[in-house]
Structure formats: structure tokens, C-alpha cells
Length: 335
Image: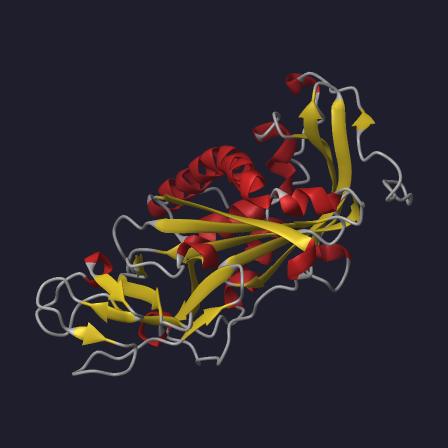
């Protein structure tokens, strides 16, 4: 980067870069100080969430006859859309005899239990109380006050994103045996990028840490591998606006303004002997290049590729998070 803009709308974002052999990279373990990462994690987990949890992609809860079910923090949740497209959410157990409502049907916006036909329209009914829910256009959030235990907020804190009509978004979801803090800690350790993901990143340098300013952010100069020696260099800034969220925002280079939101949603109840956490990652890509209009036009074909790229990275990063939890749970984690 060195103070220069990496790309303009009329130049190619691709650069040729000689990639050193993996074992000849500069070690990063001295810079990746455990106390620095732990401090950033502690501040992140102390920030309020208002008891809001990311459930999944907005597109996953469409106008369909099957509801969407998810267990969040040990609580069964069912979501569906009313006839006018409004989102509905509530407990996943039927108030009659406890049937799993995720296996029921939606008929004209009404949830019909498949055991005895009890109809739920999203309003309170015989002890069944709906949950506050929010659709931000990319992700769906549900508020679980009993699980969160914080002062409730009317709306979740949604990161600033590119203008919807000018971006392409894709949402990837996976799960691992760990707690949300292990996922967040992974994202607050940018130094592992070129070592742990050599197929994706090269020349990663951490340009700033929370110790360098008041933004509580990590700034990273890195090149994304395309093919062979072809790379796309960018500057990315990582922040943790909430206890279960890390946002990577490209601030210079190709796709400036694009964001990758990583949300860690606990699936098991607090204190579970074997915790399980879902990673819901939203990639919202934008570009000022004239040709990006074509990318928006073929977005349905691009989304599977975007999810596949995220999946490859998370195959490794979930192993990282699971290892961290395993060490913590047995008292063997360093520091």
C-alpha cells in the first residue's frame, strides 16, 4: 500500500507478486502477542448485544411452505413469513403437546402444527409468546432475553454495509464444537492469515493494532491470491462491534467499502459440557468499477462461489476455534 491507492476504476486490480515458499515467510508469532489478542477479545465480549442473535440468511426464510428452525443458546426457535412477507418468530415447541414446529407447514402466512393443526399467526397464543425479530435485508436476528440476560435493545447493532442495490451478498453457515469467544478470538488474530491460509493470502502485514489508536481495530495489508502469481492487494480493517461479531471492512484497494461480517451464534445453552457454535458469515461485496454491474446481474451464480470460498477458510478456522476451546476447557490454553 505505502500510501498509494491500489486500484482505480480504470486499472486492473490484479498485481503480479512473487510468493515466498511457505516455510520462508517472516514469522509472525512475536507480533501475535496473546495479551494483545486477549485484550481485544475482552473488550469485544463486554460490549452489549441487547440479547440479539443472528439466526441465518434473510434469503433462507423466504415465502415458502416450510418454516425455518434453529436452536439458539439452547432455545428452539421457529421463523416464517406472513402472507405479506413480514417475519415471524417464536418458540419452536408447539404450546399444545410440544411438537417441533420447524417440521410444520406455512399456509397463507399461518404456521400449522403438523401434529394436530394448531394455527399460529405470530401473535401470543396459550402461553406461546413470539420473539422480537429483525430482518436487515441480509441476515435475520432474533432477540432472546432469557438466554442473553442483558438489557434488551429494540434493534440489533447492524454494521454499516454497501448500498444494497450496488452490492452482491452471500451468506455462509457452518458449526463447530466451541464457544462464540473462540470464533471471535480467531478473527482478532490476523497474524495467522498467510501461515494458516497460504492458498488464500500472501504478504500479510498488520499495519495497526488497537494499541496504535482509539479505534480498537486491527488494520491489515494483504494480497488475496487469484491464480499463480496474480494477487489483489487491499487494506482491511477488523473491528468487533459486539460480543459475537467481527467485521472486516476493505478500506483501500479493490472493493473498498465491502464488508465481511462474522457472527458467532451459540447453539447450545450456556455452560453446556460440549458447546456448539454456528458461524454465520455475510460477505457484502461492492466495487466502483463499471463492470461490477455484470457481477450484480449474475449474482445468483456468484453466491455459491462466494460461499465455497468462505467454506474453505472456515474449514481451517473452525479447527482453530475448536482447538482453542479444547485447550481452554482443560486448562491448557497458554496465557
